[in-house]
Length: 326
Image 1 (cartoon, rainbow, N blue to C red):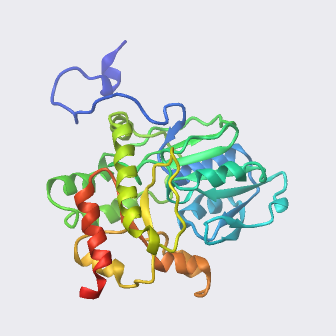
Image 2: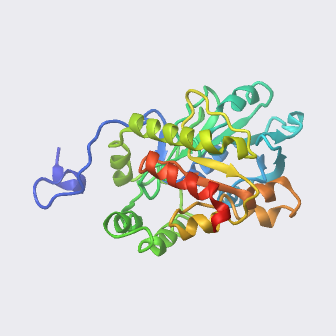
């Protein structure tokens, strides 16, 4: 082998970022650059002409649909985050996309596959959920781990295209700044790096992202997320308008807390507890009296990830329970 033809095989010189190559959680999946491109890959491989997708979803999913000129139609969901839909409408060249909301809908998906043909599962919020044989599925890594990009997909049909490998180092600044300084100092970098993912072509996952994802202790992270979810749910479940249940194999992304405390998000922010909003575009798509509008406006997505433990969960609980003091 001529090592000098490939920079990744250079011998000597300065050190690179240290990673510990153990394994990838989705080692049997196709690893590419973004979740929206994972959907694009599925649309092309399955030759999808039309897709049904929920109003309650991220608008980045429209990017591949518009690029490929795939027709789409929205459907509504109920308070259990399940489709209100006549599945007999789905014809042979049409597909139905369902979002595994917050990584908590595996049990419903098991029933959905029995009554809906041509199903695509959006597991962007459910990294740990196992793929189902014959069901096209895609995942996002950056919603669960410290990477700037990266996605996995399962699809029985494969494209013959030869894809370039992505490069991620220019999108990593916010991760490094947060580690070295603070979340606040790196926030503008996060926004810019996130925006740089728009309208990217399908590429294979970068060597950098893949190396980081091969270095993660997935079992430990799952245990921490489940434990933090259970701490919050024990105290908040009785006042949460969402009917949540954590199955044995579920590993949640966040704790979705739906309450009538409309000042909660601001109160948390004032105490440097940052909660993402999923998804502001829904308020443009839906009427103000729709369920989807209410879910977007009122659900607060409490962080439960692997950086935190019981102390942080109790701090969040105390802020929620002591609202009358503010």
